[in-house]
Structures are given as structure tokens and as C-alpha cells.
Length: 65
Image (cartoon, rainbow, N blue to C red; front, side):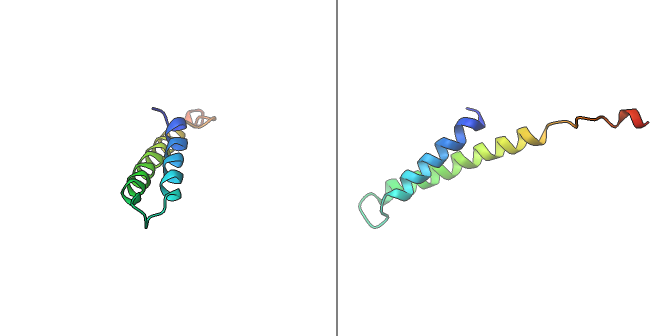
């Protein structure tokens, strides 16, 4: 999956996990959703940073030499 799909999916998982109350019997599922959402959103942000960081400059410095 690319970063454009991972980030919204991670956000959705985080919101579902945070929407569940942590003092109910659903706290294990909530914790798993929070952890899964954090990992997924983090992977999407990491891929976005790598994709944006790999762009080359519009004007090349080769002409100065």
C-alpha cells in the first residue's frame, strides 16, 4: 500500500480505538486499534517523508561548474 492509503487508514484505526472507552471490557480491542493505527499512520508518514525527500532540485548545479 502507498502512503496515500496508509495515513487515512491509520487515522481511522486511531479514532476507532480512542472512541472505545478504556474502562470497559473493550479495552483490549481499543488498545490494539490504537497501536495498529499508530503503526499504520507512522508507516504512511515515513513513506511520505521518503517520497518528498527524494525529489531533486528544479535547477541543477551542474551548470555552475
